[in-house]
Length: 348
Ligand code: SF4
Image (tube, rainbow, N blue to C red; front, side, top):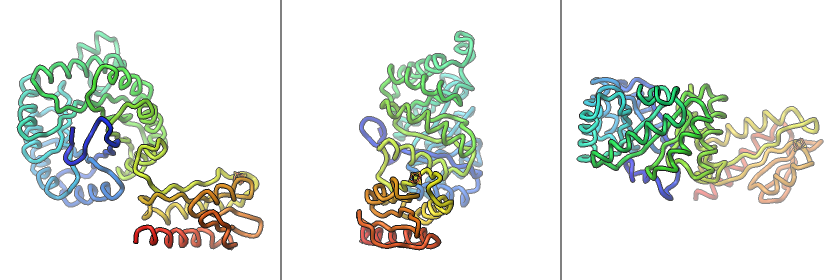
């Protein structure tokens, strides 16, 4: 299936999603944020459409970006139909809160007419009362039961351009729900740990949940949910995919964990180098920043460019050879300069 120009599911690469947090009616700010997300590597952007003014703005957002937009709709099916008519590549609905069978049918009819994908979002916080009562709590099994119930309804209505998501703020529940559901369904899955938290905690919780699923072949699109700038969500998502060798090749800075053998300067050198090299993130380069002569020369030789600290300064390595001794205070700048030269030769 496709969400805009992005092919989803099967052997297609895992797509990265994020969601804007500017007011949807602020078209300039939202388009600027979408552009920042695109530059960071985001491929699909979800936008909340909570009311009529947001729906009016949504058309301008679709016109103003090349990325496929997903309209996030709750409660009012007319907003979903309106977003589809205004060019949404996908609408995300929860059939349980959109007003019943007939309203869902109206959304699907519009989606079928316009070729729009529909994401069925099952969230542990909003399961149907009957299912929740039957299972006693919002268990992973209850989430799966809900997703299967919605799937039956969609299929009865003859609609199959579907993506499912089963999300919980509990990492284990997210893993279990998606694992159980994927064993019973071939529809593409959007995965993520919802309400994961602020940058550090949220990144770790998301990485654990998403990675376990992806490593088991489950998941077609991902969102890292953070209480932070959405661009951070994309950065974390890219790191998750790169860690599993699933993403596009990208720049990787290998840096030692530090110990008593190195200078305290090393952390500063590693962080400064990483920040300096952000513009080259899309290049498939390996850069090493190592603290001493134990593992340093080996890792630095193995990298495209690297440094290994020594008693008298930092030894610069290029293409596997030690080429220069640099004062510690200049190490980050010299390493950056070396990568710039290499990047220029690659992008010629
Ligand atoms: S490379 Fe050297 S400084 Fe870094 S952790 Fe290993 S032994 Fe310690």
